[in-house]
Image (cartoon, rainbow, N blue to C red; front, side, top):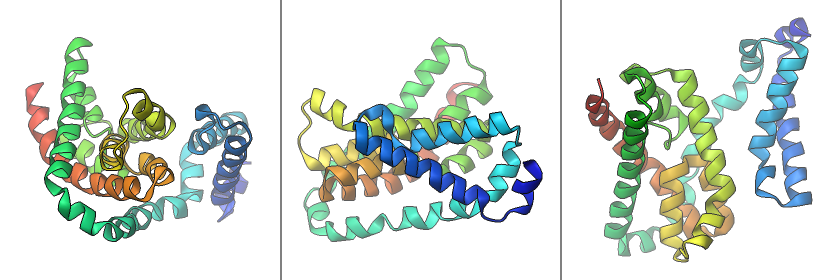
Length: 231
């Protein structure tokens, strides 16, 4: 099986798409938060690799075209933001303050948890970029001396949780303003959460898209500063 994976160009891509498709079908059938398509796809891929005894690096090589599309897919999020440019201009102060508070909360909560659980410096900086997109988070983790592979896993888990529970949390705390909802989702759960924001509405999707970019920039700066709080 491993030899087939190594010689096949598209099997990794096809299996990834198939796994995600199964997740989409389960989501449509049961409409449960736990039936998140990305979560289902991750679980199916892990089970498949474990049962077939295929090395993860082999699968990763076969699924590389999907990873290649991550960056342009993120860039495409600028489209809904452009469509809501007038709304952004009217509320730019509230938007920027909201994103800043979201980034500060994320970094401060990681520092507090690292202090309470007595994490070493490498583990601490590994978690700092948890709420930004993978492309930026990997670079931040590597620069600060963290475990990049763990950072990727943490970023994915953060995004999936945000995608699953964003709407419920907004309902519980009675957050009805579309701008506030979009900023909260984008600043806390990056591109995966933004997919849920777009389902909630055009304004939510646009504000969440903006939050991804600004949060990424602020986190690069903020993580460098917070990394010095624990040596």
